[in-house]
Image 1 (cartoon, rainbow, N blue to C red):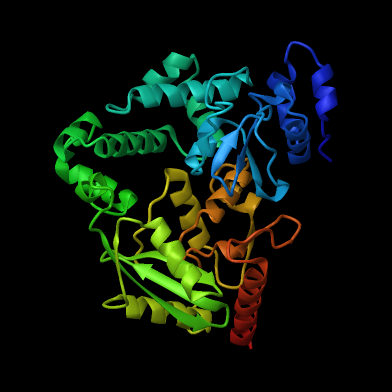
Image 2: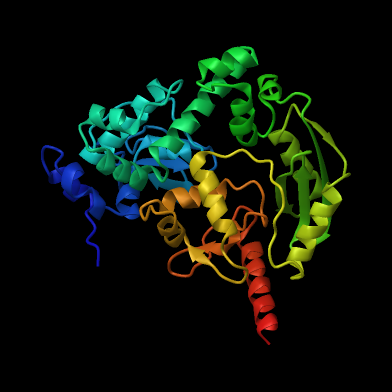
Length: 378
């Protein structure tokens, strides 16, 4: 059994050596105790993120303590940011602090890639900057971040493009400044992640059109929204007005119309999936995601109907056993319920864990899928 180290034991160790040798023995409850105590000894060992605010902090942050159920932990700020969280303006957790040598190496690699987002450096060049072999650096980076240095570089280049477009730079200038060699490469690689063309993104999404409809199902109300490219939102709830309000809040500058076109077919496919007629949903998607979120969602879509995986199992299948918390964050950020079946991910002990649309709905979904598989076996 893994031995846990309490916050008090950590404080009693000198020279910060626990960060170099024993940080892997720490567990979530140790981290939570550190947050309650605002223990600065844990700064550099872990950051915590709050699902409701989408902000991450140092353990010593003086801000109001969050609800424990809303908290998720990450080894370094860059992993939290890949999961869609932004740094606290009060404690500035993204700024340097003492850390485990390997974690610090990953942070240095991330910073080097960010500094060269317009022309991603070669693996050998990055490794030489941090005095590690390319193979070892690549392996540690993927274990900590859940993605490769190349995937992180692509994400940084996209972030640079988005920042340039938001600043009002024309698409051509933003393209070359961000390191895209041609317009075809720009539209090929960026449009899917932006959820719209670069020019539309530059205008804040103004004019982007989507349609939506709300129908009844055994889970309550089902909202499905889509663009000309594919499904962009699938939500569950009990109140039509609340679902509509939530959709418009997410896309404040888009043109949102009533149902039409391919939307009818997509809604029909989802309803038939819920009734057990379609075992698998294979719909076109128009969603934004970080590189890590996209990998997690693709892995969730590979989970067979009637089966479940734990957060740690999904992390292991991604080749990053320590990324269970980041997997949980990606599940919570999933914008297309059912199409990306995050309800099939449960806790290691078999407990249901959380679900954005309510644990009762998660339980009903799993029961329905399991009974459907039993009927097919008969």
